[in-house]
Every structure is written in structure tokens, then in C-alpha cells.
Amino acid sequence: MPDQTAAQTETPALPLAGIRVVEFSHMVMGPSCGMILGDLGAEVIKVEPVTGDKTRCLPGAAAGFFRTFNRNKKSLAVDLNSPDGLAAIHKLVDTADVVLENFRPGLMTRYGLDYASLAARNPRIVYLSLKGFLPGPYEKRTALDEVVQMMAGLAYMTGPTGRPLRAGSSVNDIMGGMFGVIGILAALRTRDATGRGQDIQSGLFETCVLLSAQHMQQFAVTGEPPPPFPERIAAFSIYDTFEVKDGEQIFLGAVSDVQWKTFCTAFGFDDLLADPQLDGNTKRCQARDWMLPEIRRRLATYGKAEIAGIFERNGLPYAPINRPEELFDDPHLNESGGLVPITTETGGQTRVPLLPLTLDGRRLGPRMALAPVGAQTAALLAELGYSGDDIDRLAAAGVVTDAAPVQEPEAERLAS
Image 1 (tube, rainbow, N blue to C red):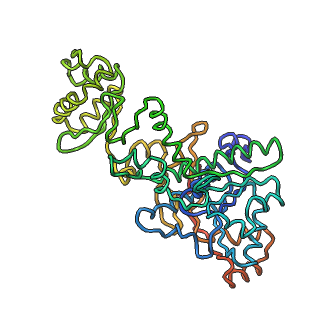
Image 2: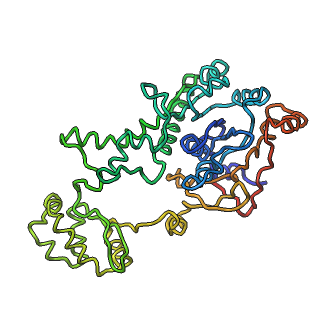
Image 3: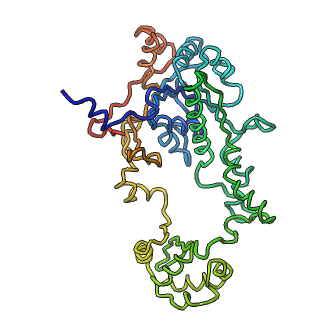
């Protein structure tokens, strides 16, 4: 008989094992919150319409949203506008530790799924609303990541003057989801002490304001409006993208006096090292208008790989200018276990990056295939007391979608 104690020591329980989360969400902000909770071990049940979350089939730049932010979740597909469907959902949320939602204001109240209604039946419920704006004059506005990037100064700081540019990822949606997780963890900790849950909100706009806070304080310190990043006054002498041999590009940094000395020594730039105009980071920053063109001229004869090798050997910061699709072949992500296979909702395979953290050296990965619409509907309804005939009746009436989950090959199943 296997030593169960030893097995438990080898594979400790995940931090949120035993916590049930019911997720009412779509797009990125809510799903990213649920994904993190699922990766940490919570049982996350994604409640979808009978036709499925529309995020599953978005085109273009949003085509990867569903697969990125919906791993480690069960799918229960139900029509909330049906009395039978809504009754099933009320039974489900009565079993939950956490409910999270990111729908428009008032929608959850209409279904009796708002915090006040749920807490009246279950005072231990932890309830998270992921919203465009926290309570205040803007709270009823419709918000998107790009909207708040424009409002909060991030787009202004990213593009050149007169050309505000959103960041190339849903940074606020993802960070807003992360802050939602932080709020949930704090509320669960408080519940351990008090026995009561809490009503939590995470705001998209306020998330972006936090990203812009450093520039707000730059103005407070200097009295000068901060210029957009393409025109910023550099804080470091070398902190730029360089075009080198064959038109290739590489980002290089030398942000301290020690790194400047190392850089000059490694490339044999003894004359620059001895130049009193370049003695100290402040002087070098003041000399960037002539110093950088000279360094660019000297480095133009080097290949990108050659420069990368020199910087690597000397412990200097550098980076290739990668495109997202190139990350599938990144040696660090692959060899460190940070990019792992997952079975998709259609039974195929893709690879996804894990949360950027370790727990006692352990990475937290997918524990199940991405769920097709309604993959766990029957199992969850049965757990709530519905008979097989009841489930068949609800499915036949279009109240629920009952789909078989994807069976991933045992050899490809990933242990977290």
C-alpha cells in the first residue's frame, strides 16, 4: 500500500483547495481573476449562457482571450432568464465561498445575485465585483481597457506627443483581476477570524491610475509635466534599442557607473571610459545627444547574437526584441517549465504561460482541459440534488447545456 503521508509531502495541497468560486464573467478582467484563483487550487465554476460565453469566439486581437484566461475552470451553462435555470444557480451560489462578477451595474441585482441578496442567506459569502470605476461620479459609465488608458494618462505616456497609444496588452483588465484576487484573499483571511464575508470591488480606471501614479508624483516632485516616454528625459545613460548589423535590433542597458565601466571594457571603448564628460551617470545623461550616436556607430558592426553574448558574459542587461509568437520557442520558458501544454476545449493542444511565481519551487499549472460549454453542467446539477431525469428535462427545454467534457490523453495531462 502506498505511503499516503509521503505522497502528501511530495504533492502538498494547493493554497485554495476546498474554496468554491462561482464566476459570472466574460472578456478579460473577471476571467483573469478566476484563472488565478483556479491556478491557486480553488474550484472555479464558470457560469455561462446556454450558447456559451461570447468570449469563446471573438475575432482578431481578442481571439486568444478565452484560452488564456479560462483554464482550471468548470463550465455550467444555464439560462438565467428561465425560472428553473435561475433556481439552479441560486442553489449553486448557496454552496459557494466566493462569487465574482464583472457585468454591468444592476444586472446581478435583477437576478437576486447581488451581494446583499446572497449575504442575507449566507453571511460568509465573499463577493467581488470587477467594475470599470469604483463608486463615484463615473461609476455608471461603460469602461474598457483602452478607455481607462486614455483617461488615466497611460496612453498619453506610451505614445509620442499628439499620438496617445494604448499598451499592447490588456494590462488594466489583468491587473484589475489581480487586485480582485488580493481582495478575495484578504476577505477570506478576515472571514477566518470573524465568520463573515465581505463585499469587494476592483476598479479598472483606478487600476490604471495606479500605473500612472509614478508620473503624477514626478510632476509633484519636479513641477514639470512628464513628457511621453518616447520623449522622456532619460534617467540612465544607456537604456535604448540599438540597430546593429544586418538591420537587427537589440535593447541594451548600462544603468550604473559599474555597468558603464563593464560595458566600455568589454567592447574596448577605453576612450569613452576615460572621457571626463562621461564621468558619472548624470554627465552621461547630459551627453546622450552626442554619446548615443557614437555608441550606435560603433555597435553597428556587431551582430545581434555577438552583442548578446558579450552582455550575457558580463552580466549586463539586454533583450532581444521578440514578437509574441516567438515566445513559444523561448528556451527559458520551455526549460524552466513556465510554458506548458494544455488540452483545449476542442480537444487540441496549445501551450500557455503559467502564473509568474513559485510556491516552494513549485509552478502552478493546468489541472484539467479547457472546458467546452456546459462540460460540467450535469455533474454540478447532480451534486445539487437534481436527478438524471431532471437534468434531461432541463436540457431538452434549453434551460441548460449539458456537454461531455473533453477527455485529455493521460500522458498529456499536466500535474500542477
